[in-house]
Amino acid sequence: MKKILAIVLAVAMIASVAMLAGCGQSKQNDAAATADSAKETLTMATNAYFPPYEYYEGDKIIGIDAEVAQAIADKLGMELKIVDIEFDSIITGVQTGKYDMGMAGMTVTDERKQSVDFSDSYATGIQSVIVPENSPITSVDDILAEGATYKVGVQLSTTGDIYISDDLGDAAAERVTQFQTGNDAVAALSSGKVDAVIIDNEPAKSYVAASTGLKILDTEYVSEDYAICFAKDNTALKDKVNGALKELIADGTVKGIVDKYISAK
Ligand code: GLN
Image 1 (tube, rainbow, N blue to C red):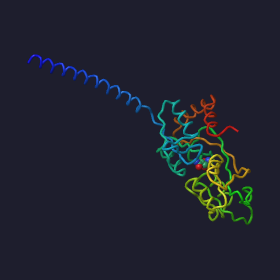
Image 2: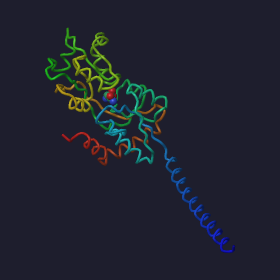
Image 3: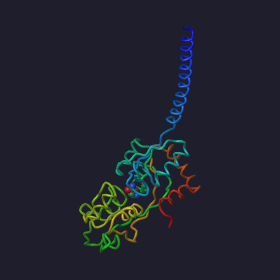
Image 4: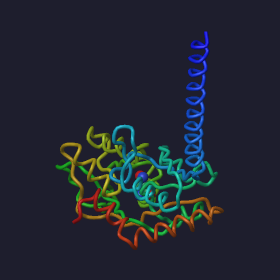
């Protein structure tokens, strides 16, 4: 009987030691979880169909913007969260505070500056023209020429859309088709629904490489600066991000990321 009691006691002791150890373990996990969730989140709105700045690799969004944003978040001790939305909704989402910042190969323009604030520029872009290989179009001037009827595809609300729609004036309604993504615009070009696509040069290169029978014209339309946008009343975050960005530009991190995605020319 004594023996049985001893065994029961021993088992109970082992069990309680194990329980205590278990408690300690779960406490540690809790502590780690608290530490992680205590990290402030930096929510970045983007449109992940803009290679090599942002695009999907499996279900992960990668690219120049994703990596620069991660480097900024690391420097600031923040947890980066990337949210993929329509390009057209980024500025409003940032303005209303739904997202902390917008980073989407976004060009700094005077008009956008009225709605949002921009960081320093971290990259440059060019508006290029994609046409079929046998196209008679040799420059934007051919599209804008008196009497021309060429139809142009663009990504809605991008600078390509804004500039060509401005330049075509009244004719824009009939001659400019706005697509939700650059990919859709290029698909329309491949199927002959439009005669040219105006879009940033780096995604233009990816799209042309992925299709057959398309080329990018040598003549550039407009050259521009990319920056991160913030709500106008969020100067504290803008200044913090800008400080981190300045250091990452100065120590060559940003250049390293750009070169990794765009083979150094
Ligand atoms: N650079 C262009 C703009 O800001 C296009 C950006 C994009 O399509 N992601 O309008």
